[in-house]
Length: 159
Image (cartoon, rainbow, N blue to C red; front, side, top):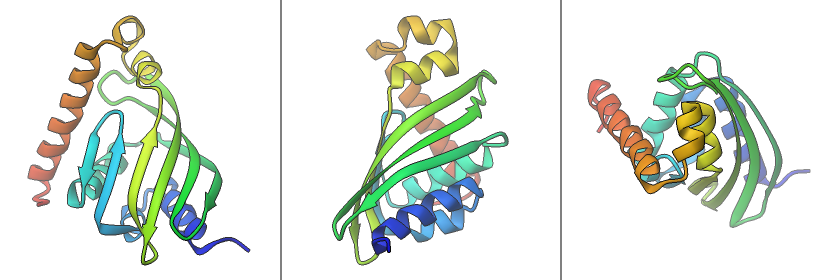
């Protein structure tokens, strides 16, 4: 029998793979703190809106998840997202390790870890491979992701 927090992680990724953003968001506490190498730290509504935006833009997304373990306070999982990056239409296979913290049967902290240099090489091509580790390129990736999220939230009237 699995731990209830393992079930929450499983529900989160099953919902993600089925493009069910409502199911994903049900797993999050309202004050969720999400963090990854592209978006940095997003809190609450911004974190939830990010998943909504990514699902809406993920026409060819396939998702696999595994190695889910959790206890009363924390958990982790591995997941692989395969998709075409929208700006370049280049194929990305992103291998991610996620860490979670829980409170009252909800995820209160979600941190995704992956190699941004490898991601930028797949998403941006030779420029990403050559320069994807530099602060200039990583800064540009992050600022474009955040401005894209802000614009998305404005268009969808999410506040």
